[in-house]
Length: 250
Image (cartoon, rainbow, N blue to C red; front, side):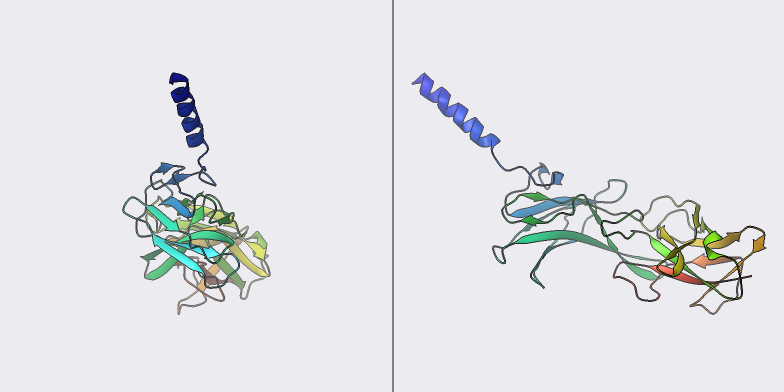
């Protein structure tokens, strides 16, 4: 009888160890690896690790159009989404955050710790972080860009450097703002500086031996050595892409 009980306990323990781990790793609503099969769980944080509540998380089918499941993070920054039985196949997850600042409304795609697709047969954890700069998985950047167009100057734009001086001590997410110096480069025919964290700055253009002026293409102002920067949407941009455009002159 004792041998039977002993074998029963060993088999029970082995069965517990075979439970499905959370695909992709990370932290689910009840701790690391807590996602159940058929669900997606995770946490949403800012760049300092502070949890974010009320963030919309969307799970989208990779084949079928208009097949979505939604959830919002709770007060602890956690969410859980149960995948439907139909349509079958694979899904991906994304999270977005909206914020008002500088007289503008902004929407940000949050960075996922994993971007691969998953199915209802898996237990999946997807955590998201609010990043203001850095490379995106799709090849773009989380930061905004400054577009430069020549007007009455023969300088080589690729030799121009833009210097951004913070007009406020913090960026849109509350992190510290710092001086940024970036070289202008040609991106698909437009000269620009890319991946600037959204904040409020003044900017000047620097070129060896020349004094350059900047003029906002969408404001009724005069060319000046230094101009304010408030990022918006100018031209054909993606949903979460922002920029500002300047004329460059002597």
